[in-house]
Image (tube, rainbow, N blue to C red; front, side, top):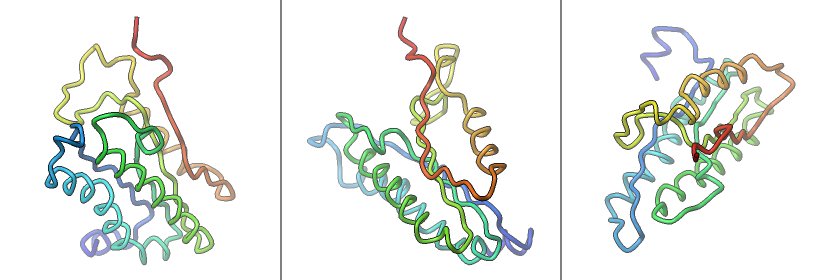
Length: 165
């Protein structure tokens, strides 16, 4: 954060978009996998925001977390991932309440299926039905352009179709 402020003089936007997923039934999920998921998907966001907080308040900036529909929709083999994303959604919503009167806007975007490299997936033509990374990028741009009096605090976004034929 110090290097960012030294280079640019201010911080207007912080986007938390790191994520890891270890998917296994609870009977097979290891404590290391649990800790890695929580540390990356939840604690990493906390530490990032804490380091940026003064700068965001000074700039009356914007904090955006990229969560997941897994933050409201649980599924088998995803206990750590679901816990981390439920936590991230709750964290961002609580932070929004803490910071909005200081002029800092906070939103969480909760995408469904995204054509990404998550968990070493290689996007291909089979992923054309999914949300594309540039779609999420456009959503972020749209949030930043929104009238300052309006705050979309939680956005659920899904592919238009299921990909099943």
